[in-house]
Amino acid sequence: MHALVLDRPGSPDTLRLAELPTPEPGPGQVRIRVEAAALNPVDYQVGGGGHPDWSWPHVLGLDVAGTVDALGEGVGHVTLGQRVAYHGDLRRPGGFAEYALAEADALAPVPEALDAATAAALPCAGMTAYQCVVRRLHVTGEDTVLITGGAGGVGGYAVQLAALAGARVIATASARNAEHVRKLGADEVIDYRGEDVPARVRELTGGRGVDAVIDTVSSESATANLALLAHGGGLASVAGRPDQQAVPAFTIAPSLHEIALGGAYSHGDTRARVDLSRMLSELFALTADGRLDPMLARTLTLEEVPAGLTELASRHVRGKLVLSFA
Image (cartoon, rainbow, N blue to C red; front, side):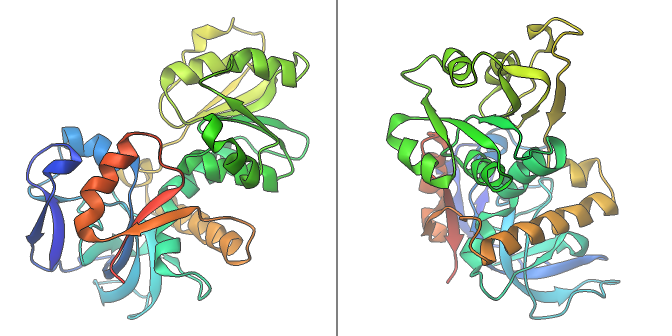
């Protein structure tokens, strides 16, 4: 099969096209004929340092949509030819190839209304946002939510999900992306380059602060935003843990949530993997009925993926880039 591979840890420009053996599914696995695979920050982040469980050459690509091509032993709830998508195991070869293996219990059926590229855009960023907004912070219409990086993948989905919940949404973004983020559902957009974000949040909330923070930027950003929580508020960190010492103990009593989808494989069990399927199915339903914008920016060929990952690493991509074999 045609694949894009890393021969050793390295930057996106070290990826090369290669011919690899078509993989065979093991017990509990299925083989997917890949139709689309999303590009995610984790691809260049982990690819740069490698992973102790990888063998070489390694195929990147965690978010895959395609058709079930072969069944492993013990798989009974999936059928050959079924259209599915999934968020894969970081420790295993991924979807920047014509075929990939997946755990059957993590698969989500793709509705007829969605094409493969749209389905592939959703898993990693969409489920991360879903965990933040729905599962961990339990955002409601009574809440005010601060979301950093509102024009990015996780941030953009989080803005939409929080708006769907009826919350007042304050997002950070560059000035050039402000209108885009407002269209996703943000009530207020703060230019993180030209404005004092904490001061502006306090101004917008009358000094009260926010009920929830979804930080997609860094540990330092999460720490700074922790102090913006109102009493009893919660912070979900995607890119780094906050320093709890930023607020005095037993004052605002914040709840802190670390989001790590990959832990469903490395530290979870069947129940955790099935939950990946469930969350993705819920995101598909929202997208199929027009309530969630999949934010598909553009599709790429296999040859264009390295340049796409380099662009993604600049942190200025709006929405999602997706490899398409169509």
